[in-house]
Length: 306
Ligand SMILES: Cc1cc2nc3c(=O)[nH]c(=O)nc-3n(C[C@H](O)[C@H](O)[C@H](O)COP(=O)(O)O)c2cc1C
Image 1 (cartoon, rainbow, N blue to C red):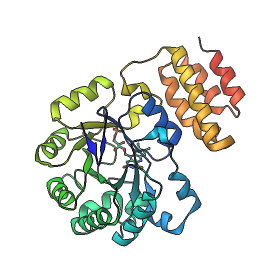
Image 2 (cartoon, rainbow, N blue to C red; image 1 turned 90 degrees about the horizontal axis):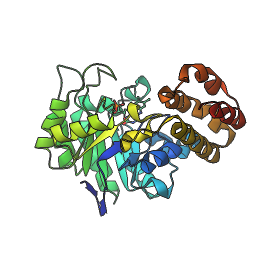
Image 3 (tube, rainbow, N blue to C red; image 1 turned 135 degrees about the horizontal axis):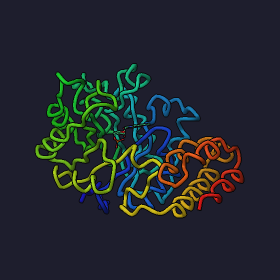
Image 4 (cartoon, helix red, strand yellow; image 1 turned 90 degrees about the vertical axis):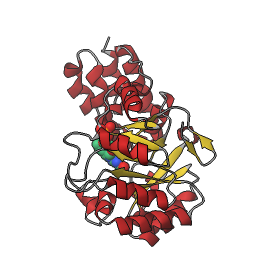
């Protein structure tokens, strides 16, 4: 079991941060099904400093999501430290540093997984952020830049020396993006070497697989991303029938409308597409549901599932 500061984390399955998916409504749902811990999607440190409206919206969370971390990305130690201080004012349970994001927009500024090729800067960012806030600080990393530069042991040592409270490890290199094998041996090695709790991550598709990864690596927890979208029951291993899925879709829809207003319908479409994969006749209803413009339309189509 992981402790974050004074908080003991119940359970060992964690919802991975995913931009565009793991917003406040979805984080609440994941918690309901037993996710032990959630993290916001990545949030720009620059955006926080500038008070960018869209960025500030990403900082919103509710009490039901605790324990929750706010994840920051950036490449300037002072900007990251200032952003962490402002994020701390929102009273999350911890601050998380993104050292894993491989999308171009983030890499271009040298942030995210870009930091893996500059361990000196990475260490400076981690130690400056740790010193700037009272909250625990975690990091989410990949295992290196590419197959020839799997420098994870160096990275892990730097993070530990910087005072990081725990870390999540996506067992791929930056160059791999989201493809190719996840190196769970590297994750197990990090767990064995590390003096702080380690959360393993990568390609877990079922509750049973999650349990097997926990057992084989000795990790303190494992983190589930893509397989949790439209599939929040992955956190308790009890898959509902079609009626149960329809009920969950309706609840999620209500949360989206409450949180976002009308624009919640559009934002919900990508979730619906994933939920209905598990329902019978899903191919038939997919287009209808995904193209629905109103809550009433969605409910009407859902009622035709049986
Ligand atoms: C659409 C999408 C968005 C993501 N956004 C983030 C993010 O904001 N922060 C982060 O640390 N990782 C992000 N990730 C990476 C995931 O947290 C996770 O490490 C990765 O998907 C591997 O886990 P999985 O195989 O269980 O999905 C994202 C992944 C996806 C697919």
